[in-house]
Amino acid sequence: METEAKLDYERLYESLYERLQSPLAAFYQREQQLADRICFVQPLSADEVVELSWADVGRQIRSIAAYLRSLELEPGSNIALLSANTAWWIMADIAIWMAGHCSVPLFPVLGAASIRRILEHSEAKLIFVGKLADWDAMRVGVPDDIPMICLPLAPHSARAQLARWEDIIESTPPLTESPDVNIEDVATIIYTSGTTGMPKGVMHSFRNMAAVGTLAGEMYEVSRDDRKLSYLPLAHVAERAAVEVNQLYYGYTVFFNHSLETFADDLRRARPTIFFAVPRIWTKLQQRVLEKLDAVRLQHLLEDPATSESTRCALLGALGLDELRIGISGAAPLSTSLINWFKELGIDILEGYAMSENFAYGYTTRSGMARTGYVGTPCPYVESRLSDKGEVLLKSPATMLGYFKEAQLTADAFDKEGFLRTGDKGDIDSDGRLRITGRLKEIFKTSKGKFVAPAPIEDQLLRNLWLEHACVVGAGLPQAMALVVLSEAGREQLSTEELANSLTQTLNQVNQSIDKHENLSHIVVVNSSWDIASGLMTPTLKIKRAVLESRYQERIEQWSSCRSLVIFEQAC
Image 1 (cartoon, rainbow, N blue to C red):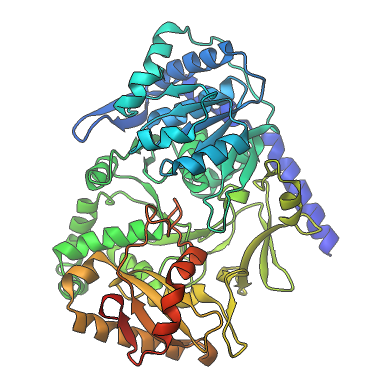
Image 2: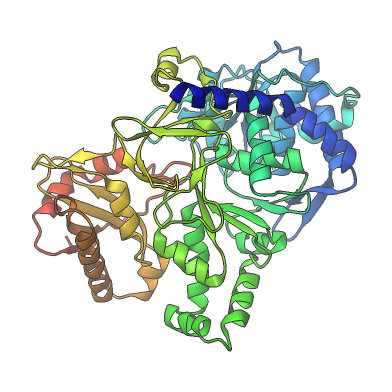
């Protein structure tokens, strides 16, 4: 029976591969068929935007590809991309492919040391430098022997020093031919966000991208009439799959975010029909509503038949989500309270689960099949099973080729049947829906010899709207505790006494719902922010658990002996 199932999937993969076209071939189709339609809407400042048609985009890409060819780099060379999201980020990516090379995106918030490590490990032969907050500090991380090309919207200091995109386009005739790629070649090397140490270079083929671009579009019934806002880092696999690759196959318009300060305006301009966000973004949108309308008043308006519909329409219009048909959350667990809150506004947030190693294509929630705490069912063509240790194992047409220059790590990433080891523990219900119960490496043992999985407990803690982050710790302690960071609303709207009462209630509710050996002894409200700049979060806004535990290690034992259930760091 098992062999039959395996053969069925092999046949499915073969039939899929027969109908796939490369991302580059898909681009040529859009370039021809949609020449006059808007491809990108790119802010140039807080007040000015430029619209670029598919024909405009094609001309620029073809000139840059011709220039890259003129450099006579070895075919298949790795070319890096360091920039915040812009239309030119995607154009550079496609130009790299058109010239016969492989792209290596870098997160635009990396420090110089991380940039150097990745550029050296990837053996990058050239780097595109674009819109960045601190190029002068980052510049130190680029080895002197790597040529650089400056994208539009790059900092002034970069534009003064480097070869400029605009000058290259003006002086280089565009390619007239439309060269395709070998669909099995490496298209990109995506360096992981590094929650556990040195990032690994995940290699993906053009075929992997083609499978995701095609299948995700079919799954969500994407069309050229959809709109998306690009604001999460394109260097991250989920944004790349959801925005860039999917667009190549379906031809919709992509809008870009100018800055954090203009995000609300950019979202209203785009009025996306499909919106992908990490939990922190959904939380920020909720907070924006609650700043204008307190929770009690909002609940009253939504429950009153005379005001419920007009209230929903007004709030969604103000957010820019009034035409949203699909809301998706990924990268980290979304609190159930937040899911329920948006559902009352008329938005069903569909959670997904995947990783860099399968190009963000694993599990997703189908409309009408959501279950609290679960991340949906396998995407089409995805095989899933649990190991004897409860680890989630996945196989799909989007599974990575391996880690660049890391043969042993690649071998360790797969089981003997070729399933990708996710490192996540989970369980699967009778309808095939997956619930992530924690990371294998994150589960810790208390001094009483009992194992605690932190992730599900953190999810319950974050149902408290006054919290933004939570991290459950307790290895070697008699009992686990939670370190938490207040949300902006929690800091500004509640007194210390009100917060203590709210968090005590949360602590009691959580402890009643979990096994006794998992019960939390305390909630500790820490002073500092957990963000990328502090090194406590990855560029994809996941907490770096090991770094957090190390930072607070000296005080954790002290806090564990306190009598108060809720501890405020500044008062200790």
